Image 1 (cartoon, rainbow, N blue to C red):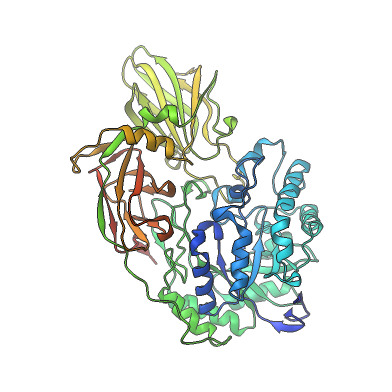
Image 2 (cartoon, one colour):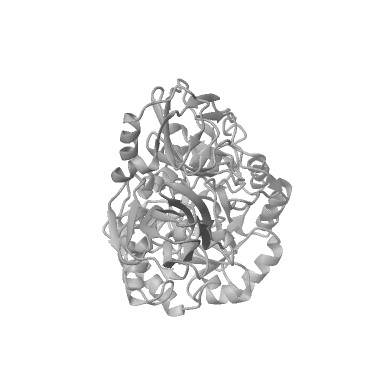
Length: 591
């Protein structure tokens, strides 16, 4: 068995100085059949450690469930890290940010009676204790002194940017120690005096998060961490993208230079991200600092290993830098990337969303419109319904929409209102009468700052000409399992005209063969906004707003014959075909 400790100047592995050369790799953003490949490529680049967050909300979609199967099998992931001869850093939160929905905090947590989060609130702390008890069988036996790969555990995450409750941090330490975690504990904060002071405790090893000006940032960190090794535990080598913005990149030369400076000064590092992966399904987060900005499906992050697991120019530049500080085998390198198969697929079997409603959930009724959270629905879409009878002109006014509402009268589309545009009112046709339906999309919960934990759906009342609308029905659309909609599609007639446009909201369905295994890139041009499933697995959202113009399809999802593609298009598509293209397109770039 080995030991890992923090000395007066260095990390110590079995009593000898050890520099951590880590890369961030989130198991929950990568298909599990690709974990071993990504871990091996990290070692081939020169890294000796893999770092990962743990997303509480993914493991615990409800209070009664704790899922560690399939893509959430953290134990298997850590075992693969060990099999590659690497160490692991685990960051269980409970808050992780990570541009992940709600910063990793379960939405049900905010319905449990906690007065506040990320502070010493008894209800919140009790939930954390239960969460850590559930993680204990995975983490505790995989610590390095027990034969596993884990060398460090992080407490909270950039807490100094949020709060300063030292008792909260002390209790988190006690909970982590109480389940049997004995490896050293760290904290991470941006290298600002107030954040470093507020985000840690005297007994915890402070690390920094930054992506440039390495010498200056390490000097600031040293003032707050006078002994022990310096470490940038989030060395930002790229950035994330929002819908409607550009694709963010950093220059290879500058990133490599900043990494070299950091290592030359003797610091340890965790490259964030080494491999970003994908926000599959409804897992993307959002930011709101006055304008709501949902994050795209890709979490490529301009990382050394791109979203499809291919080495980039940044990978090779970083490898050259790391070769100055660790031994590398020049013959042990990743294979060259291969292009994706190019093919067109007919999705001419279509059915309106309206025809699938009975198979996607159950209606609930109330006098006023409930939030989606009120009915225990924490992601995706909610459909609201009521009756109206207006004499003359009318204006529909919402208190607040989170996050995007398509408004229909008698199934005719009246308009779309978006949170990011601060829209909350819509003119009705004169003498509007009949069934009013409002399809609301949760576009991702805020993952950073004071707006964590916000409810979704319609917030507050709805009025027409100043009069409140009452008697509402709400259908929480359950789209995590698309098979009920697929059964409706299977019975729908198939058009022989692939050139026919598609009017949404509607599902479209098709099949295709792929004799040669490999990853695919789905071109979403010509489609407006929606989601895609391949063989029942939700790839995530697409949007003509960009910048992302293709969706990554992991090869392990595919089979040689009879692959099924299902699309929910919310607005319209130019034709009832989709195309797979040779390469990923994440959109236009600005420097």
